[in-house]
Amino acid sequence: MATTTAREKIDPKVLRIAVALIVGSLAVSFDTTIISVALDTLSRQLHVPISTIQWVSTGYLLSLGAAIPLAGWAQGRFGGKRVWLFAVAVFLIGSILCSLAWSAPSLIIFRVIQGLGGGLMMPLFSTMIMQAAAGRALGRTMSIVTLPFVIGPIAGPVIGGAILNSLDWRWLFWVNVPFCVAGFLLARRMLDPDATNERPHFDTVGWFLLSPGLVAILLALTNSSQVGGFSRADALGPLLAGAVLLVAFALHSLRRAGNALVDIRVLAHRPLASASALTFLSGAALYGGMALLPLYWQQVREADALSAGLMVAPQGIGALLSRPLAGGLSDKIGARWVAFAGFVIIGVSTVPFALATATTSEWYLMAVLAVRGFGLAAVSIPLQAAAFVGLRRDEIPHAGIITRIAQQIGGSFGVAVLAVILDVALRSHSGSAAQTAAAFDQAFWWAAGFTGAALVLSMTLPGRTTTVAPSARTQGRARVNLS
Image (cartoon, rainbow, N blue to C red; front, side):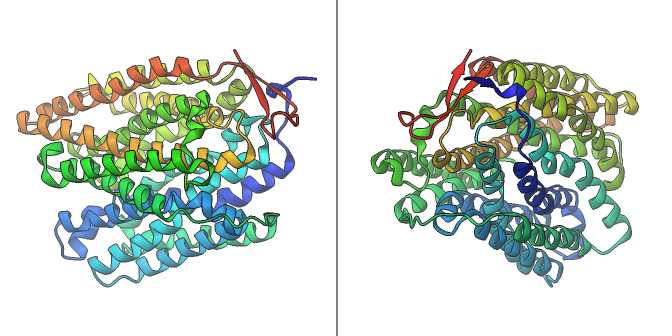
C-alpha cells in the first residue's frame, strides 16, 4: 500500500547519524565563513600583498574541488564510517597546522590539507544521511541535516570579526578543533560500520579528467573576480581547459557505465537533473550575495569586520526560522512549489539592496536580510531532498557528488560574475559614498537576476511524491509517482 512521505516520521537511526555528522561538519561550515573576513588582516600580519594571501582561500577551494569526486569511490572501497573519520582527522590536522603557520606559503599549504579533508566530508555528509533515510521524509530530514550550512553564515563572520578584534589570527583555526574532536568521537561511537565487501576499481582516467577539470574551472572563476574579469589569460585559459576536461570525462563516464568515478547517467533521472541545475543557481545567489553583503557594509557604511558580520547575521536567522516549515511542506506538497516560493522571496528581498542608497536605514536592510534568509532555506531544503527522490542506494553517492559540484561551481560563478560587475561599476562610480552605493546597486540587480532563471527551472522539479515499496523488478529503486 502506498504511503505518502508527509506522514512518515524521521527514523531515530537517521537522527543519530545526523547528529554525529553535523558536529564534525560545523568545523567546515565555520571555517569557510570565518576566513572570508580575515584576508586583509592576514595580509598585514604575514607581510604579503592581498594577491598572495588570496591563495589561502583559493588553495583551499581548489583542493576541495580535487577531493570531492573521490568521496563515492572511497565510500565504496573503505566504508562511509572509515572515510568520514579519516576526513575529519585530516581536517583537524590541517586546522592545527594552519594555526602554527609561520609564513604565507606555509599557511597556504596547510589550507590545502584542510581542503582535502573538507572535500571528502561535504558529499559524504549528504550521502550517508540519504542512504540511511531510504527515501522516507526527505524534506524533514534535510531540514535537520542542512543545519551546519545555516549556522555557518550566521556565526562565522561574527566569530571571525570578534577574534580579529580581540585575539591573534591563529585563533581563527583553533575554533575548528573542538568541533573536529567532538565530531570524530561521536562518529566513532554512533556510526555503524558499513557492511560492504565491495572492492571497486579506481577510475584513474576519470579522476585525471574530472578533478583537474573542476580545479581548472574553479581557478578560472576565482581569477576572473579580479581586474580584467573573464578576459584575463589566467581566467579564460583554465576555463576552456576545464570545460574540455569535463566534456571528456562525461564521454568517459558514459563508456564505463556504472564503473566510472562518477556515473553521470544518474542525470537521466529528472529530479536530480533539475535539482542540480537549480543548486547551481541557488549557489550563485547564496555565495554571490554572501560576498557582496560584507563588502557593502564595509565600503558603503564603513563598518568594521565584526559589525559587518553582525549586520549579515539576520540572513542566517531567517534561514533558521524557515527550515522546519520548508522541510514539512517539501514532504507534503513536493519540492516544486516550495522552491518556487523560496526563489520569489529571494528575488523580492534582494531588490531593496538594489535600490538602497548610502542613507537607507540599516535596520530596514537587516530586516530584509532576514526575509532573504527565509527564502534561501526554503530553496535549499527542497532542492537537496528532490535530488535524491527515487534513487537506488548505490546511485546516491553519485548524486551527492553531482549536487555538491553544482553548488561549488555555482557559488564560484556567482562570486566571480558579481565581482566583475561590481568592479566595473565601482570604476565608473568612483568617489562619494552615494556613488559607491550606486555601484553596489548594479551588482545586486544581477544577484536578483539569478533568481529569475531559477523561477523558470523550478517548475521542472517534482511535485508531490508518493513512494511505493521496492519490488524485485525495480531492483532496489523505490518507485516514485511525480505529480
